[in-house]
Image: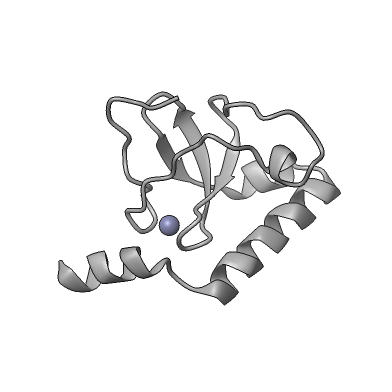
Length: 101
Ligand SMILES: [Zn+2]
């Protein structure tokens, strides 16, 4: 599903296209769009964000209580995703965008 306008993430300005869920990527569930209140990981910088409006990709930085509401497995999956993204580093196109601005 393409949207008219997607807001950039508040962390690094990357525009996440929320068309695949972590459960789906991990082969553990169907591919569903996120709902308001769901957590996402920025694919560029690894920041954890909370969806405010899935239609526009509007999100906010995660707060401690958002993390505390997760199961142990969810926290572990989130941490693994963050480590992978941060080890990989910024997406080259995004790094170039930042250096150009
Ligand atoms: Zn980011």
